[in-house]
Image (cartoon, rainbow, N blue to C red; front, side):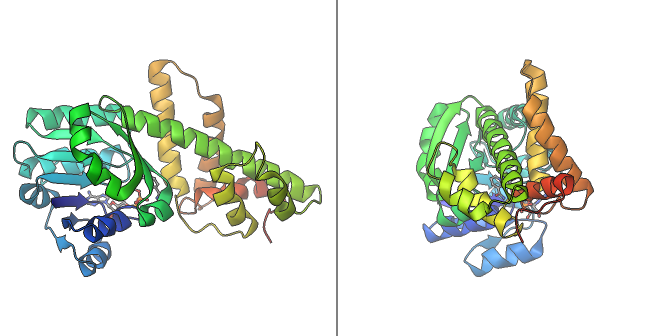
Length: 294
Ligand code: NAD
């Protein structure tokens, strides 16, 4: 089918390539020309604006950094809603604040555009493989309509509830990932400082209760001091800030999330905001004087 895709970053580019491989016609837009050129070389067509993309495609996917970007691209001047026809489907796959998803959906609804929020988990490797975990909010019937398309990009797509429920689910995911990375950083710094080889600790515990997808992905990066993103510290700060706003809004305190957010803010202030979130290990190196890696 004809699909518009806006936001060609670390995630958007491989997602577009998978849609192309599955035989869809994809028209793209991004502010970054190099990213547009890369997916055009893979078979996409370049649109001239978000409005242009929405005016020529019955379904538009957005994959942008945060709530303000999605609001601007959808509701702003030259945005999706200025070009979209009645009945257009918008699937926002960015990770944004659930309240922002609800606000954007209201603007869509006023123009008879149907919207889902459908953030993802799995990072760049799973975006490349087309095996993302997709969490969806919005009308169940619309989810059923687009489920097969979502499964071109993901291994699973779960309908979690009404609009915003996808992003609420994603906040839970981001809290669990952040706290797990912090736990791995803290524990591996301890063993290194106590004179035990972190590689042997990893081998000894990865099959036990402490084992996790996060530890399997991030402990080797810490042991190699390889913090190439992946998922950037600055994007994780954004997610934890959204989690805390949401938590405060519903009266659900997040003390552990607050701690890890401050560790990430320290790394941002030290100039590491574009590092992978496994660079939380740098925070522990700073406070302990010991690096996990060489
Ligand atoms: P990214 O920063 O690599 O890409 C964002 C893209 O949006 C950039 O190409 C940028 O030029 C474009 N953009 C920004 N404003 C725009 C505008 N007004 N018009 C058109 N294009 C615009 O980010 P990413 O890592 O691809 O992440 C995208 C979303 O997916 C984020 O919400 C992130 O939290 C989420 N996410 C990322 C990962 C990951 O591992 N990178 C994993 C899961 C979810």
